[in-house]
Structures are given as C-alpha cells and as structure tokens.
Amino acid sequence: MTWTQVYTPLGNLYLSALVAALPVVVLLGSLAFFHVKAHVAAIYGLVVALLVAIFVYGMPGQTAAATALYGAAFGLLPIGWIILNAIFVYDLSVKAGKFEVVKETIAGLAADRRLQVLIIGFSFGAFLEGAAGFGTPVAICAAMLIGLGFKPLPAAGLALIGNTAPVAFGALGTPINVLASVTGINVNLLSANVGRHLTIFSVIIPFWLVWQMAGFEGMVEVWPAALVAGVAFAIPQFIVSNYFGPNLVDIVSAIVSLAAVYTLLKVWQPKTVWRFPEERETPHASARRHTAGEAFLAWMPWIVLSVFVFLWGWPSFKGFLNHLSNPTFDVPFLHKVVQRAPPVVKKLTPEAAQYSLSWLSATGTGLLLSGLVSGTLLGFGPGTLARVYGGTLWRLRFSLLTIAAMLALGFTTRYAGSDSTMGLAFASTGALFPFFSPVLGWLGVALTGSDTSSNVLFGNLQVVSANQIGMSAVLAASANSTGGVMGKMIDAQSIVVAGVATNQHGKEGEILRYVFFHSLALAGLVGILVYVQSTFFPWTIAG
Image (cartoon, rainbow, N blue to C red; front, side):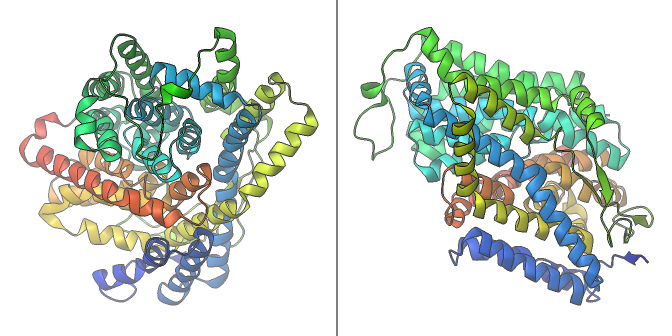
C-alpha cells in the first residue's frame, strides 16, 4: 500500500502553507517567547506535526508513527552520538586539568577575546565542519570557548554564527555531492557556483562575529586579524571549489586560515586587550608560560580528536568501516510507502526509508575512540574513563531526548509533504524567485538541521522553479545550499547542540534569540546576491 503526498490539502497553496508551518511556529515560539524547556518544546512541536500530517494531509497513522520513530532513531545515531562523545573528550580534558593549559597557551598567543573567537569559532570550527559536520564544530568550539572563559550565551551564539561559511562544503563536500545526485547537475558546476557565493561571506563572517561580540569600535581595532582570517579562508575556498571540486574545500581553507592568523599574531597584536565587562582581570594576569611538552600534552586530546575526525570522514576509510559493519534495514510501514509527486519531483517517486546502524563508521565512534585514546594517554584507567563517560551521558540525557524529538518532527514534516508545501509557496514568487531561492534553502536547513537534507528536500524543486521562470538551474540549485548555510545557526538541532556544549539546558530560547537576527539578515544578503547575479551578472554563473 502506498500513500501519495498532496501539497495543497486545503485547496489553496498559501493557506496550506500557513497550516504546514504550525509545527515550526509552535516549536520556535515555545522556545523564544514562552521559555519552555527545549525537550518539552520539541515534544509540543512533534505532536502538532503528527496532527497536521494525519488530519490535514491525510497521512496514514501507522506511517506517521513510523516516520516519527525513524527521525528519533536518526537523532540518536548519528547526531546524538556525535554530541555525546565530543563532550566526553572535553570533559576528560577538564578532569585532567589540561584545559587550563590550553587556555593559557591560547592566551599567550591571543589574550584578546576577539582574537580567540576568530581562531576557535571561525578557523578551527571550519576545519571540524569540513572533516565531520553534523553538529561537531558547534559542540566542540562552544565547549572550548566556555573553557577559555567565555560566558555560556556568547560562547553558544558565536560558535553558531561562526559555523556558517564552511557548512555547504562540510563533511568532505557531502551537501554538494548530494545536491548533484538529486538534481543531475554536474557536481563541479555546483561546487564552483557555491564557492563564488560563499567566498564573499567568508570575508564578511569574521568581521560580523567580532562586531556582534565587541561592537563596531571593538571590531575596527582588530580589523587586520579579521581580514586575514577571512581572506586566508576565502581565497583557497574559491580556488579549490572552482578547480578541484567540493571535497577538500573546508579542510584546505581552514588550515590556511589558521596558519595565516598564527603568523599575523606573531608580528601584530591589538593595542588594547578586549575582554568581557564582567572580567576583572586581563587574561594576561592569570596566564603562565608552559614548556613545549606541557603544551603538547594539553593539546593532545584535541590533536587526537582532529586526526580521528578527519580519518572517519575520509570516504575510502568510511567505506571500509561500512564494509565491516553496516546493518541496514527498511523501516516498516514507511519504506517506499510515501510517494513524492510533481512538481516537487519530475514524476511519482517512492521515498526510501532505510535506517543504518553503521555505528562503526559513525563520526561519533571516531570521537569516542579519540576520547579513549587521549584519556589513556592522560593517565586515566578504565574505571575513571567509564565514570567520566557516565557523568557525560547523565548530564546530556534531556538534550539527547530533545534531539530525538527534533529529528522526529523534521522527518514527519518531510514525509508528510508539509515542508514541500512551504517550499512551493516560496517557489511561486515569480520574478522575485532569485531572491527567495536561497531563502528556500534557509528554510530547508532551519526545518531539517542539515544543508545536505535541505538539498535533498528542495534541490529538485529549485531546478523546476528556475526552468519555469527562465532562471539558471545551476544558480538556483547552488542558491539552495548557499542560503541554507545561514539557516544552520537557527535550526533546532544546532540550538540544542550549542546548549549542550555550554551547559544551558532550558535556555535554548535565549540562544535562539541571540542568533535569529543574524541568520535572517545573512540569508537576506544571500538572496540579494543571487538576485543581482541572476538579473545583472549572469556571466558570473558557472557553466
């Protein structure tokens, strides 16, 4: 038995879109305005999503239930698995007393908070995004900023804002590769066009980060560092994305950016050391010098983590692990039961629903092993490692529940077709579609928590809409991914990850309010860029 999605269940596209948006409105409204705890808000949103799917869209009840369970399982593995083990590594470093040394070595290089957020929140976060993605950079960078002395809210918000420019090329180019497979467009054309968009924002984001934290005058004082971090990331990003493809864009760009900022700080420092108003002493006052051996031992968990994350993200190694253990099964009552329909797809297409228990190749497993290896090297025995891990798991129990509920909500809206209803409403904007094309990608990431998932969801719809109005299909598909990266900071999954990393369970609404304007403003800028490119400079479009 199959069930075909209907995108105008109420007979009118815009009225249907308003109803389709109810789960998201309930979720975000509960977080932002009613200060409901995240796991409760997620459950509220999930209940509304199920009611809309069953009673408005006519989805069979057992199919809707299977969809929610499928999403919850995906939320725990691989997403929750990544977060749990990333925080485990951080907890080990703190217990060993080594994070104090990490703080002091960073303070020795850059005591200024503005420089620290550039190094950790932008450049190092981009490396982690390129290697692993799926929440890893936000979890680790937010935790590191907390350890450096940042207050929880700015640590979470700045980590989210910093994790934008690299997202489209995250996890070794996964979003672009998936977009190519969904649309049938050459992957190198998509990579080149996305690179041309994001190169501009890679220069903007470092300035944006510092401005948000320290104000305009504070940003002006460190403009050389912001410029070097951004340009040193943007140039390799442009070259690699345009001439070598999407796979290593973030890795190469992040390494060049880190090296360039490190070199600059050896010969230049800002005139004043900026710190938060509540800090009574400068970071210099408490920092002490460490030997090379002490510094290496303190940084060792993060070096080991980076190696494991890169290795687990490498396609050939991941394929080898999948060959060893990749149990996959069809989700009962869901696999190929739901059919997507035109104009979202070219013809009726059964939606696959296969869950993979590939725990061995999951990025979280690499993080777990990096924790066990570094913990052992730090001198912890099996009993201590187990106790630390148990403490981490207990601390994250509600956050893992939240992530499971968030993903259940996202999967329900996807399989019910309600997210496609919202997408079609954006796609109906005619001559203004070049502006709304990236906004549609932004919506996709805000709903699904993933640029990859947004490309799967709306990639073909972008191409269909572009062909109807005479817009470049390559530009529209690329805009879906480019606009999507700006939605990464407000998607529920990322908000929860940031809250977990900064120990702010129950304060996710504050994090959402902190970043929402930035997400919307940057998405609008991408929309303007794509509109101008499509209307006035079509010769700049790849292909």
